[in-house]
Structures are given as C-alpha cells and as structure tokens.
Image 1 (cartoon, rainbow, N blue to C red):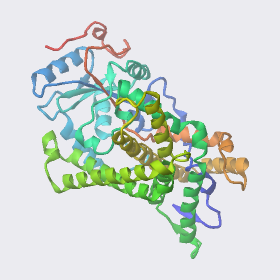
Image 2 (cartoon, one colour):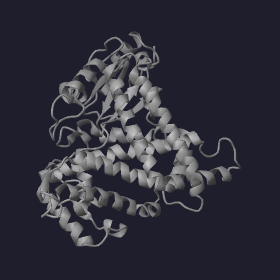
Image 3 (tube, rainbow, N blue to C red):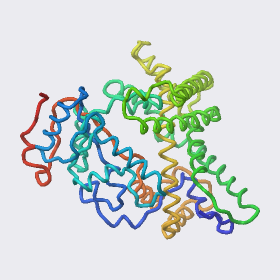
Image 4 (tube, helix red, strand yellow):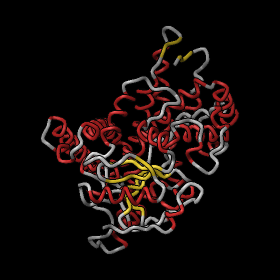
Amino acid sequence: MLVDSKGKYPFLSLLHFLLPLALSPYKEKKNNGNFSGQSCHLRSFCYNDNVVMHDSELGVLRPKYLERCLRKQGLVGNSYRLFFGDMKDSSMMIKQACSKPIELSDDIVPFEHHTVKHYGKNSFTWLGPRPCVNIMSLEQIKDVFTKIGDFQKPKQNPLSRLLTMGVITYEGEKWAKHRKIINPAFHLEKLKLMLPAFYQSCIDMISQWERLISENGSCELDVWPYLENMSSDVISRTAFGSSYKEGRRIFELQKEQAQLVVKVDQSVYFLGLRFLPTKTHRRMKEIEREVQDLLMGIINKREKACKGRNDDLLCILMESNSREIKEFGNKKSAGMSIKDVIEECKLFYFAGEETTSVLLVWTTVLLSKYPNWQAHAREEVLQVFGKNKPDFYGLNHLKIVTMILNEALRLYPPAASLLRVVHKETKLKFDNTSWSGDCSTNNPSPP
C-alpha cells in the first residue's frame, strides 16, 4: 500500500475511529434467510454454529451408532475412521492452504468448505470420535442459542486454558455473576471516557508514518504490524491506564502463547502427546507464569491507585467487584477472586486485540481495492468533523462508515465458527424441505 504525503493520508481521519471497513460490491447477493447464501466463499462457515455430539467413549461402537442416527435423519458425511475421524484430513488441508498466498475470496476453513461442496449443507464431520453437525440455517442457529441448556459451550481443554478462561467460557450462575460484575466497564458513559486513548494511539501511529515518508514523499508500507501495534496499544491504555507499558508486555506474551497453542493443536492427534515436556510446552508454561506475575503486579499497584478513580477497565472492574463483595457480606462465593480478575484481564486482550487488528487490516485492503467507497467514507468523516478533534457525538452521524463496518464484518468476520455441545437428547428445529421426514420422530437414545 502506498501512503502519499501530498494526499494528506487517505486514511487519516478514518484511523481516528480505528479505521472503517470498505463496503464492497459483494453486497448485491442477499442471504435469503441462510447465512451460507452470502457471496464470498469465506462466509460459508463464518457464521455457522457447529453442534458437537458428546461422546464419553473412545472407540468404534458409539461413534458408529451416532453415525447411523445422523444418516437416518438425512445428514451425510465421511464414514467414521478410528480415533482421528476427519482430523488428519482437516490438518492437511489447513497446512496446504497456509502454504499459498491468500486471495480475497479464499475460504479460510478449507475442510469445512470441502465438506459442504461435496456433501451439501446438511452434513457432518468428525472431531476425533465425535460427530460435528454443521448448522447453516438462520432459524436453526436461533434455536441453538435459545436452548442454552441443551446446546452448551464446550469445556475448555488444557491448551485453551493457557490463553484465557473468563466470562466467555462460563455457563449458568458463574457466567451471570461475572457478566454482572464486568458490565459496568462497558457502559456507554464509561466508553466515552476512553475516546482520548483511542485518539492518542491513532495519532502515534500516524506520526510514525509521517516520519517514514518525510524524506522521499512516499513509501511502500506494510500496515499490518502498525495496525496490530495500534490495537494492542489501545487495549493496553484502556485496560490498564497508567500501567499500559506493562500491558504491552502482556500482549506480546499472549500473542506468542496463541501461536504456540495453534502450533501444538495442529501438530499432534493424541491428546496426551500435547502435554509432554517438550521445549514448546515448557515455553508455554513459562509464558503462563510470566503473564500471571505481570497481571498480579498490575492489580496490586492499581488497587491503591484506583481508589476514587475509574478511568480504565481494570479500575472499573475492581470497583464493581468490590461492590459485589460488600453487597453479599464478604461471602466466599461473592464477587470474583484475584485469579478470576486475572483471567478477565487476559480476556481483554484475547477477545479484543486480535479481532480488532485483523478487522482493520481487511479494512485497509478493501479500501485500497474499492477507492470509491474510501472516498465516500472520507468525505463523510470530513463533513462531520472537519478539522476538529473527533468526539463521541459525531461518531453517531457516520452512517456510511457504519455501513462499511457492517458489510466488512459480514465479508471477513473475526471468528470462523462457534461450537456448542449436546450432552442429552434434544431436538433442533428442522426444515422438511431439506431434512428427511424421519428427523421429526427419530430421537435416538444411546445404546
């Protein structure tokens, strides 16, 4: 991408709002009530909800029984293969895809795309001995999220726990308690106070770009590392306030940890092999301990500094947690423990930095590809703010920018899939036009 000093940065105003996304021509195709109906192949599975049938037994009999039940209900997929299921094929396709340059319309989940292309929308795959039904119908996805007691979040394995736990992994009362405590940090009035941190991080990045082009007037720039650093800087400032430098170190460690987790997860098939004391596993444990120590130090330091102040997420979280504990009389079950607070802080990074930075990169790519929408967005920003410093009120008047954000999120959403697990007999809303009639009566029990 070229940044021209004479053009006064086509993205300058937009970067004050974490860089809006381009509204591409792909919007012409409608989804017709089915998430898979969107035009880019990438969307084929980006909004899916994979329902994993719970299987407490490794072997052949139970997987084969579940396979027969699924086929009776009109679902198709590969036959079960001992222990691994489809995991070897999936891993091989991912490695092949990663070895090639990515195109704008590439499918980032190649095995799932292959399954739908080969077997159709009503298909299933195998996560080891567990069948995984691909849910692509909007009505069925609504049904899954409505029946939260039947379709539950999967339990985290030891690998994923190294990254974060936090409210996104909890169910029931624990989820409700953590959400209640965390919610005040994300009230609209609190978020308004964080705009200066967003602004400062953007200005810092623009200043770096200015220095790069000051001599020659233009330069070729890889925006990915800059946008990645800006996203982490924003989260560090808003989450930890004056301790944001320590927060940056946590981000670097969490980023390395995520890369190691993906590497280990894709390199072996037997669960036990993932936790042998190899060099990689020892490094993962070292990172976990260092992150814990850094966060504990920040919490102890901020505990005193936060009294009477609530200008960052950690202060707001600790204040809300303190109120919860006092309200319930210092009961052991009241509020969150220090360990819980640490996990929620790790979640600030895990859920916010990577998703935001990837989104901004695709924004830049699409704005470069569709300069007409770039021009529309820039014109709107200049009409709303002119040469003034951006404010929260003005953001609500950026209609085109909002459209661009929504469309780009549709084209390049931050998550490839969501998982839900079935632990007991249940029914999922079905469509007689695509499922066999047997699915209305066939409600099999385990053998």
